[in-house]
Length: 111
Image (cartoon, rainbow, N blue to C red; front, side):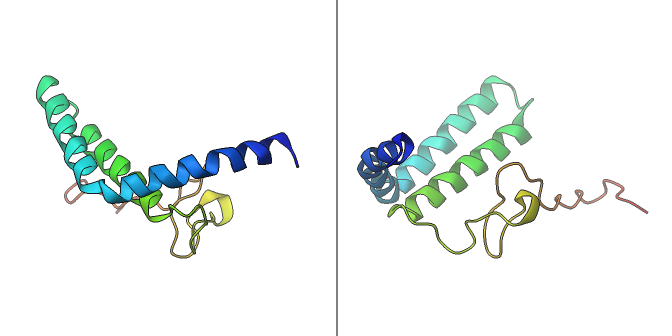
């Protein structure tokens, strides 16, 4: 058994406990993330609102994905597809760009 596998085995119980706590207290964590986002947005006078909102959304997605995967197993679609793109029903894998989001209305997309 390699060093990395031994390390994963030692960390697994802590990861499972953290996932259980995230699942149990997810609403409180979401509330905290929203509160921090509001505070940062106010202190930056709205200059970075879009980035703050995007980052908060990503943090919440990660939290919920972590909490739902608390048993340490991968669900269907957790494996990235070609080029790091999302697998069927999964999320984007590392290093991939996936499909870019559509431009906002009135942004003058490709003609």
